[in-house]
Length: 68
Image 1 (cartoon, rainbow, N blue to C red):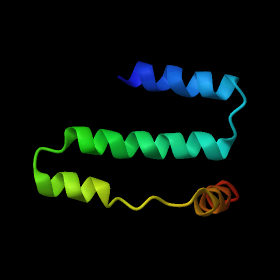
Image 2 (image 1 turned 45 degrees about the vertical axis):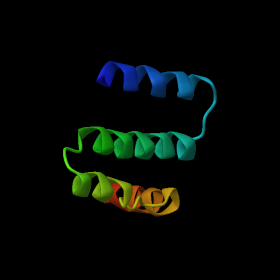
Image 3 (image 1 turned 180 degrees about the horizontal axis):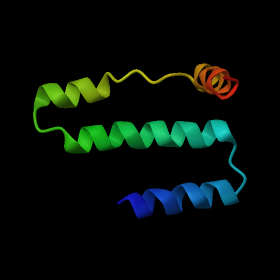
């Protein structure tokens, strides 16, 4: 499964997707994997309620860490 994700991201990168689009695709993948792995209705609901950090907040946090 990780190889499939890597290939998908690589293909997206090669087709000119922006970093923001790649970030969003990764977040969508994370949510779908959470839903797939859920074994109870409450876990499934928790996955649906996952809040994802905006790309702008992620980028600001990443830049702050890289400047240290």
